[in-house]
Image (cartoon, rainbow, N blue to C red; front, side):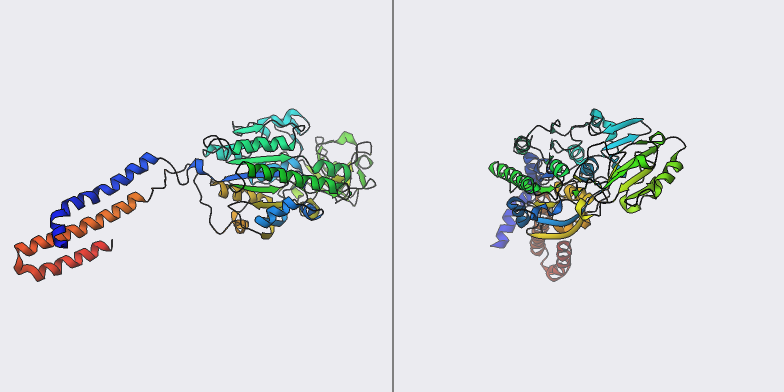
Length: 485
């Protein structure tokens, strides 16, 4: 019966086998791009509660933080970037670079080449050239064909390398957290071709309260509980939109906070005349720009002036701070010891809490929790660096990271056992049928060879019966050889 089928059906079967790859390729072309396409990119939302110290989650009941911790990952110790201020660290989070590399070295800066000053209190923050020593992740993902959304993140309302985020809010401190959340959830839940892939969300608290009250104040308990409630609002809005199980959620901060005391004041006017220098940045890490030719004189006057203040020439700043190689870092840096404040005199406002100190201090380090399809569940990691977050986010989002100071290997254990697919910056045309041409071609070749050999053998046996045994010896090795290809 098989012989009959081969004799009568071989041409038809062979024709079908040869057409199979073409049919597969046709389906590939008709269905279009899928698989690891730009539009199927994993989703990621990065949230920063400014000044939320690592230990706040255990200071008062924080059920929403702990819900994320139970369902995802926690990092106990995050070494953020020096100096531990708002603008430098928020830019480090989205670039993976230390401040000396990305150029936002402080909240207040002076650039001697531009001969201009930068201050978070002025519109200078909207000038692109301050930011363009680095490329934030929202620009990278847009260049890779994705979309981004930013709700008040420092620098996100600035055109950087010719781009704003796809969707963004101009910074306005009076806009409520709830409004920011609603807007960013809308961006994520938009129709497929308009929905953002990567979002950043910023809230000013508990930083402001930490400055005014001091982290040791019992009044901070209410503030911390309020942050947890706001996180709960975010979670509920994501759930209502059907996004909570789809979006990878990272909740962190830029820095911690330490307690200050009104008696712990270092007054520079006691040690050096203001005529000799310009004060560039504020406590606890103060940038000193000496007048021309006065660097050594100013340095000598300040070097041993106060035991609670460390004085560095720029080239002497410890290498582990990664805070030397940028023109915006001043020739002399003063660093107050924890809990102390550097001022020119006591006439200014004295805060009860502050940050900016040595980034290895426990009080300066932020919270870090995350959950979502990319992350492990109920997993606790001992430590990481904040610059490691950038390559981790790039991996989750399937975009190629730009050169950075972080390392994916340092944080790869945070990821779930199922590897996240990586994607080059220009995605290939790959679809759910992408293996059909290969499989079809392989099957076709095998079937054609099988039937042709079988058919030839039958014809040969009929026409040359005397060569029966010899033909079997010749054909069998050829068939085996082809099957091994």
